[in-house]
Picture 1: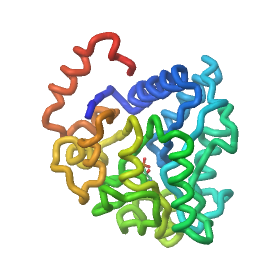
Picture 2: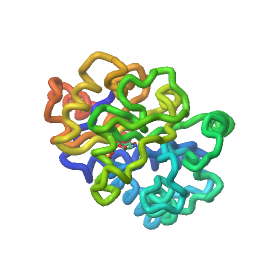
Picture 3: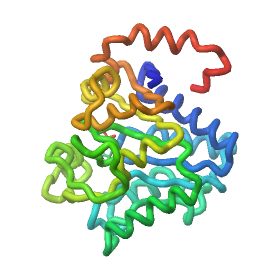
Picture 4: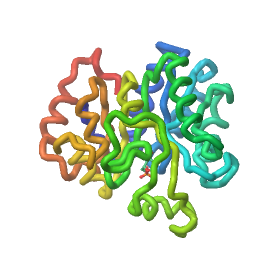
Length: 262
Ligand code: GLP
C-alpha cells in the first residue's frame, strides 16, 4: 500500500483528484468506482473544477457506485443516488446511462446484485475504485467480518454505522435504513487500482489497523494490504496513530519524478 500523508483534507483530496484526472486523460473510456460519505466531497469538488477549468472530459467515462441504502428511492434526500447527482454528476459531462448506482428499490435484490456484477465485467472491470473508510474499518458497506470473497449483495449495517450516518438523517437513528446493497470485498479487490481517502482524528485508529495491523475480516479495509495497487491519501490527523509515518514520508518524498502522479 502506498501511504500519502498530506497536510490537510483539501491537499489530500486534490492529490487524489490528480490521479483520477491522469487516468481519464490517458484512458477516456475509464471505468471508475465511486464512493459516498463526507470524505470524497472535496475530491468531487476538485474533479468538478478540473472539468470546468481544465476541460477534464467525462463524456466516455463509466462509473459504478459502491453502495446504496435498501428502501430509499433514488430521489430521497439521503439516497446515494441523490448524493452522487447533487455532488458530482450534475456538474460534469457524464452520460447519465453510464453512471451506475445500486438500486435500493430493486424487487429482487439477489438478481439485481448479480446483474450489477455482470455490468462491471461487461464494462471491462473497474480501473480505479475510490474508497472511504468507516470508523469501524468498513469499505463500501462491507461491515466487520464481511467475507473477503464477497460480491455485490445485501448487508445489514452495524449499530455503529447506523449511529455514524444518523447525522445525514437529521440525527435520527430510527430513520437510517438497516440494510444496504454494497459491492463485495471481492468486487473491490478486482479493481485495478484502489484509492482510499481518510481524513480526521476519528479515522486514525481504523487507518492504523488497515495499514499496520493484521489482515483480518474484523477490519475489512485491511484486505487492501493484498491489493497490488492501493493508494491511501490521509491527512496528519488520520495518520496520527501510524507507527511508520517517517518511512511513508521518506518513500513519498524520494519517489522518482516519473512516479509522482499525486
Ligand atoms: C459510509 C459509506 C462508505 C464511507 C463511510 C465513511 O457509510 N457507505 O462508503 O466510506 O461510511 O463515511 P464518511 O466519509 O462520511 O466518514
